[in-house]
Length: 398
Image (cartoon, rainbow, N blue to C red; front, side):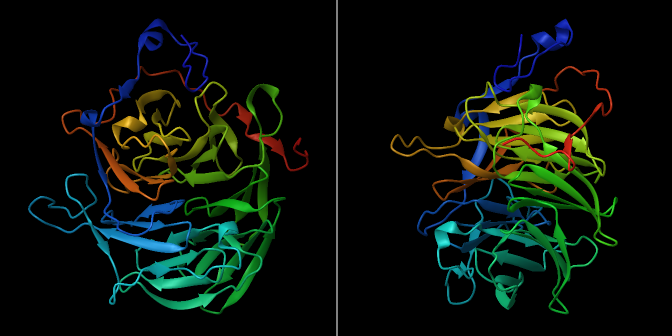
């Protein structure tokens, strides 16, 4: 029987065919908390755990930054994010909300931020100047890179916190040195705005993705382009429609997750050889975001109908489906769903969601379950058999 939700043809053996994914439809079937927040509800398109796993940082569409912290206690011995203890919304002295600089038309801005590996620095932007923020005090240190064009995605260099990659509205990627206040390289290869950036500290490459559904691989030594491929719709349907394409490296720093509203794919860098792919032609709603779990064994996927899917990272098989009724209070007059999904950096079964109604949720499976579901049968998985898409010598179809 085919997996109707993901549109994957099941050609495996009887054991695999009879295996059923877990369905979570009620609040009693999982653990979840809504993070406390008394401010005006605004969409939450950007969200991140700190690398220590002790806090969650959100950036709302109105340029407001929020930080929730968990503390060590008898109920939470590790001090890490958990659904068992409600965290505190941290405000700087004076109690004022933290905000980014904005452009003339804030509704047109693309909010984005990035945390340094040691959680000491934050770079954040909402259409205006980029702010560099001290995460210990949450005070702004400097602003830089005045617009236009506007920054649309940010990433710290994994070996040098003073170097950042800035994806731009004009389709370029700027390599910027904070210390010298200079642009060290201007990477050009995309046709539309940049929507994703991911560094690999093993391969020494930067992968960029754009609204043109193109991926580019850049060598971090001389910032030369190594590979460029266009994301293709499955089964000869032509190029994917214009939409955000996001990228994330697996914990092995070699395999890459590519997320588009129509499909998810895994590939191997730096040649972008495709490993697995599925599309949403038979799904109930478009994909809004996806992320690897911290151990790289699962992929969490959020959809525009509010549902969440947990996939096996190696096979892209659905292992658990979470109905929105399991964690969202029904709001008949308002369509509420997740814009962003993030995985805890140390707890492989925990993830958090930023929703269209301004709320942030953390979800975990029941302690008695130990995970989101039992493992599906092992499938035979061959290595890379096809390239990821068209090379940059082929023009995508529109």
